[in-house]
Image (cartoon, rainbow, N blue to C red):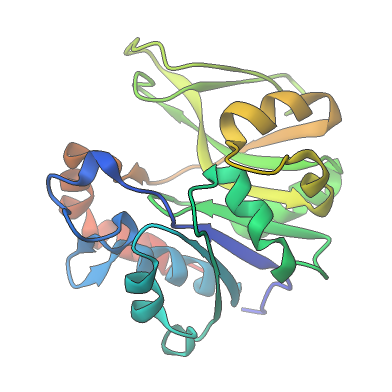
Length: 243
């Protein structure tokens, strides 16, 4: 498979507070799944689809992640690090990484605590066609209680977001995989800023689009979901290796 000329930013700096009971001194992306770390799944998924340039946005226990992945040669990738010295939120972390993305008209962003089976080439092509600021991967789930949901019109444009309601009903959720146009940086203020709560709702008039993905989706934000991911480790490994 030919490489894709795009950078990927992995957001791996979170505190992982809800997982402290089972990972007291390990950053969440380094949680073990079988013989590998969760973050290895994401790196392998990128490489198997032809994405070699990766920026890891680190923060909490950054040394452990940087020691584990180094310069990326072991994974046939080029990995660089954008380290927070204080929590900046998901949007602030993306902005901090901007100096690694100077020549990029667009770039991929992924949450480091969830795995979504996604077709990156299709997502990037869709983003080019629509010409918006953001394209987000979304998924239909049977139980949306733990997630906020995404409202989308017939033109695949995001029209709004609904906060978590606790209702155990089906819904379309943000899968934590995005393609951003470089102009996004103009809409991220300085400081601790959330993509989901503060940036996306404000830029809807400028073009936020959604593309539904199929296959496995799991995050490891709670002990229950981490246990489920461990039980699915072989399936997750297979999914990450698909080109």
